[in-house]
Image 1 (cartoon, rainbow over the protein chains, first blue to last red):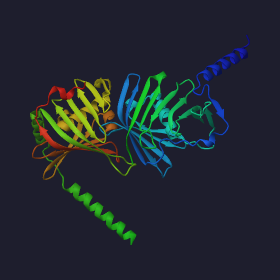
Image 2: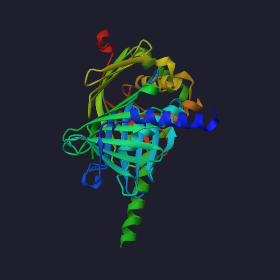
Image 3: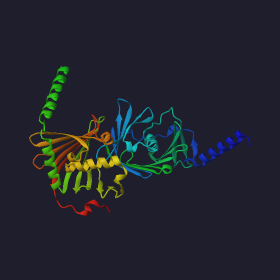
Image 4: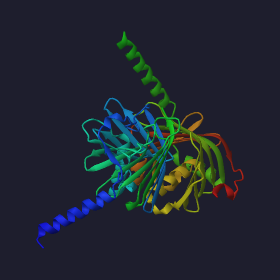
Length: 214
Length: 212
């Protein structure tokens, strides 16, 4: 069999697999995604500092501490710091120009897979739904399920909204790296009270509970 | 006028900073102080104390404050319990690091599996006990004021130094117990832990270091 045919068959198979795994399987594309207003970016509304109590389990490693998100208006950025319970800085990142940059990290956290997953967990909480990005809306027949799909670099983010258009689940579809699923719960605030991030492929489970908003 | 106010403020700040540093003078006989602190530490079997922890970060104006209580027994048993702004318990006991959150979920892992983490925890425990000076892992300079001894410790281990560049321990001269610890990570980020309502050598049952 000629090589291009094998390549074509492989490509078709991959597309078929990806399609069958799609989080929006069974939903129909809506012609007017702009009609839905959702609370994006999730961690940018109505606060200047947000503190989340955090536990991270990845493989055999376990870390606990506090995640701090601080808006940096001067730089149009968000500073992100992971602190140990005793107050020491364990990891520092910055969200700017639609990307998360690692500023500093303790040696024991400098693991490529861990850092990459952490960035992929946090990025969908901070990205905007701007017009430059492809925004697509998918709904079921009753409009009870609404999903906004946003493309960002090679990733696809699926934001599942509840009846109040609050995002209660995000699927970050990452080719060959394992999808990250984020479940979000709200209390009285517009920002999530509890978030659970899971990537089964690398046995990552990260949980954040809101402590304080300023 | 604004420039004048700014200049006065600057002078005032410089004077107050200078006078603070002036109130401490270097301890000449550091060996004698080391023996004194070590003797007190040897007589200390347990400490129970409330604590106030303040985290200062370069990029935020307000400090992050948390409060709680700790129990320290012998060298290896610590319960560090946060009550504000959230409930969280850390227990270091029998080589294990255990955490328990307000929902009752607890996790346990071997503290020796991470060398740096082990060193940082030793630093916290030894800071509370006040016997850091003797373990040879730090370059120590000592200062004193009327009521306080101040030890400045710089870690010799480069990996630990990356986590904490300097630790300042403040000892009450009367009781020779630690009243305040400042862990400095870099020029602008540091953590202050103040100990209040201390009880020395009180009975602490085993159950304090167990989570069920």
